[in-house]
Length: 493
Image (cartoon, rainbow, N blue to C red; front, side):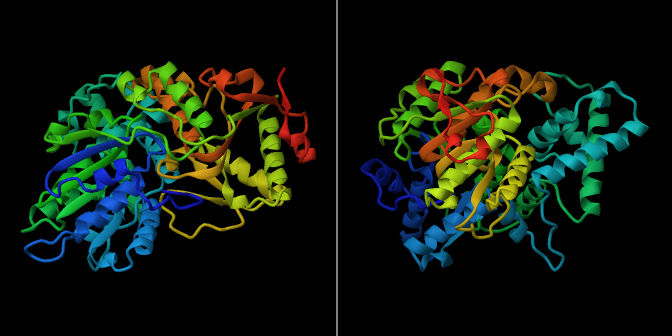
């Protein structure tokens, strides 16, 4: 969908073919970034909702990755088909479960990512006081990763379930006593969340699955899922249960992979998917930007060679990505502020610009710097559905970037330590794939741009993943914020 503009509603011939796939069966539609997957997913939902059924009007669920993206899809649904809201629910997995399980005592809302990490850190400290096992000396990243990608993603609620998991692909094996220590931390996190009136991410999905199993008929005749590759295994099980009464259409990115834990789709009841690799061309952004993004994946093993060969970035003419290299992180911030001041003086709407960063902490620094310069800014997060301000720069963490697009993209901190992350900042199982995952993130970030992309880095720590031959490199002045003109940067000779 969009963060600054709506995607076109006119479908290409290739897109229209996918909209009219059979109304029975399971389908996996894969397309390159910018190929219009969200647009086709919405059109597919509208199409199947119009198909007559013996028992009456079709009931359709269009599932988005997050509540904010679901709100955008719902707005587009209402724009294209004002009377479709009664037949098409648009939701995220978390908010759907929250509504489905609502009782006089409604379930508590889920924790945000930053809140979750804070509670995990506190829980680790509390359990370490009671338990001296070696595994508890692991860094915080080990616990946050273990809980999110293992315990919560698989829907494990009891220690017995955790003990039975094989933990394939995890670099550190855990014996039963170590697992008990880890699960003690998880139980502490769960208690802390309850104390603050919140639930853990994905924690409502197992309860929703149990209730669905006791219902006589599935709630939907058709289910359409956008960004399906970003769903956890437990969420894919929910999707399968919701679609058991009719068709299922999953839309995923050609360049990205399903969660390794969800790779065995047969175990999720999705073994008979008709795999359809389509929409290979990038249609949304300038070919120079997409060529640079594609080069990152090709050089770093970010996707299979057959998938990458299917992507031909020849859609739209436009400038190459620009990289402004500063002396240090303060110079990066100065250069960023100078670029946005220049944009403001040129009369360009600030809402066209989005600042992306790998961490929320970086975005807080940006927010402070922009406030000092008198530039309004607005955070864009997955769980916020408030209208976007027309006068504010968008501040977007990379984990909230999938499904969004922006005319002017500003990517901060293109350095070692962010792309890829340092070894000590990663859980053991994340280290072997650190470079590949960093390449995927850089590709994701670049392909959010529909017109221009501007990157910022510090000269001593410039990321080696950047394809320098495909990027226009400039050197930031010593004080880029001193004048908007100087912020444009000088070419590196």
